[in-house]
Length: 114
Length: 114
Picture 1 (cartoon, rainbow over the protein chains, first blue to last red):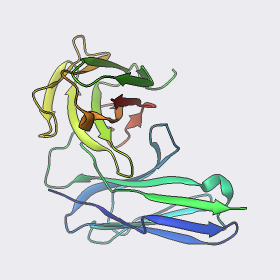
Picture 2 (picture 1 turned 60 degrees about the vertical axis):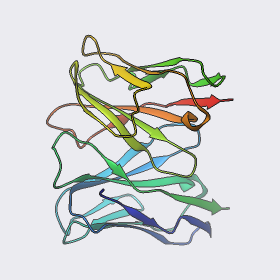
Picture 3 (picture 1 turned 180 degrees about the horizontal axis):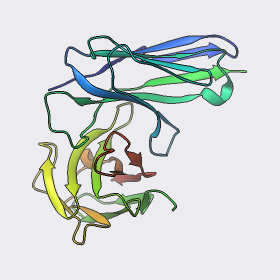
C-alpha cells in the first residue's frame, strides 16, 4: 500500500501568518497534486507537480516536489480567511499503472482567523 | 461545459436498502473514477473506467457494490443492502486520457445510512 502522510492534521493561525503543510511517503510518486476542499464539496485541483525538485507558485501559494519524488510541501504566505479549508495531497504511485489512480493523504484542516 | 455533476447530493436511507448514485463527467473526458471519503479522511479510490470498460476495482468495493458506465458517458454506483459503515461521501472524478493527472471532481453524494 502506498501511503501519503500529511502534517499537521490541523492548523489554526491568524490572518497574515505564513504556514507550511507537508506530505511525505516512503514510496516514489510519478506525480503529486494538491487539492483544496470546502465542506460538502468535492476537491478542487490547485496544482500538479511531476519533476523531482520542481517548484510551482500560484499567487501566495508555493508548491515543491522533493528531489526523490517522495515528498511535497505547500507553503502559504500571508494567509487570509479565504484560505480556510481542507488541503489534500494526492499522488500517482510510480510503480502502478498510468491511468491516474490517486492515493490521497488524510488532509490538513486549515483555519485562518481574521 | 458545467463540470462533473453528481446526483443526488444527499441521500438518507435505512440499513438494508439499495441506493444508486449517478455521475455525469465532463463531456470530452473518457476516464471516470469513483472515490469514497469518510469524515476526517482523504478520498479512497474505489474504481476506474476508461470509456465503458471498468479496468480496476479496489478491494474496498465489496460484492454489494457495483458500478457501470454503459455508454462510456455517465456512470452509476449502486450499493445493495446498505450498512451503517457505508455512510460516507461518494466522489466522482473525470479526466481525459493523456492528461490523467488533471482529475476534476464532482460535488459528491453524501450518503447517510440509519
